[in-house]
Picture 1 (cartoon, rainbow, N blue to C red):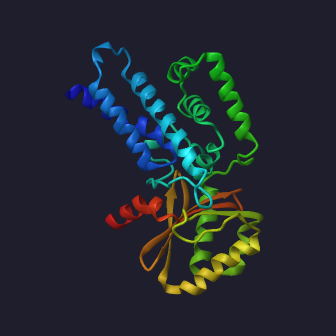
Picture 2: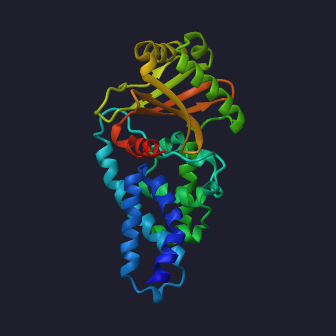
Picture 3: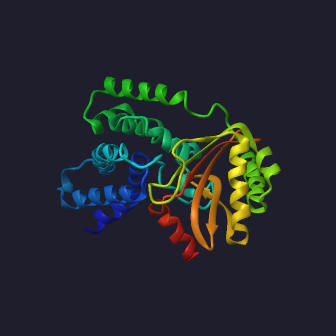
Amino acid sequence: MEDAALTFNRLRPRLQGIAYRMLGSVAEAEDVVQDAWLRWHDTDRSAIANAEAWLVTIATRIAIDRLRRAKAQRDHYVGFWLPEPQLSDSPSSPERLLERADELSMAFLTLLERLAPASRAAFLMREVFDADYTEVAHTLGKSEAACRQMVSRAKAQLREARPRYEVAPEAHLRVMRQFAEALSLGDFTLLRSLLSDEAELISDGGGKVPSFGKPLRGDARIAQLFYAAARRLQSAMRIELAVINGQWGVLRFIDGVLESAQAYETDGQRIVRILVQRNPDKLMRIAAARTRA
């Protein structure tokens, strides 16, 4: 039993990583890992030649089933559905040695929602977790040829929607520091200067707090939104830079309570897209972490 627990705990981060990218929810990912543990605990492990392959297969299949059910629920979600954000210590933390920031970002997880569950699993296993097609095929119960086709189609489906520029972390952080200062000061001119002319803001309130029913577009409109909030809230508002899903973003507190987690895409000079998570259910873990800190 001890060896079984040690093996599972060694592989837990990988299982959690797969499940979170599949579902975009920390809570649901934790449920997947727990289900995988129960099956691991109850199986005859002497018959398992490769524990990692077995656990990855089980966790992925559980995640696919859960995502199929979740997609039906998300079709009736109020407003935009955005993933649950996660905090990390820094963009280069040891936990991220096998992943790149753009493979964990809110923008990337949002894009993955375009894919069918099996295609999402195949794409993630191959392109993010570097599994070979033999492993992908075994996990999904399909032929290698079918899996290659699924991954190819997924890449094509995502290609057009992904950012067409690469931004050094230092450049992204520089823009974010300037924007965070502009948010704190409520400086309309500076806010607008740091936004692309065609900047876009998408927010998720989950029907529990106000959010926009469609994307807010344009530098002036977005700058005005942040400016008005700063003027209205004044000293009740606090802006904090934080690493959200591997990239620098913003946490906004009102009267000491976390109001939103904001992920930003930049071109290295200006902000092109903002994803604002306001759903209180999806902010609970970050709020709790900041309270403990």
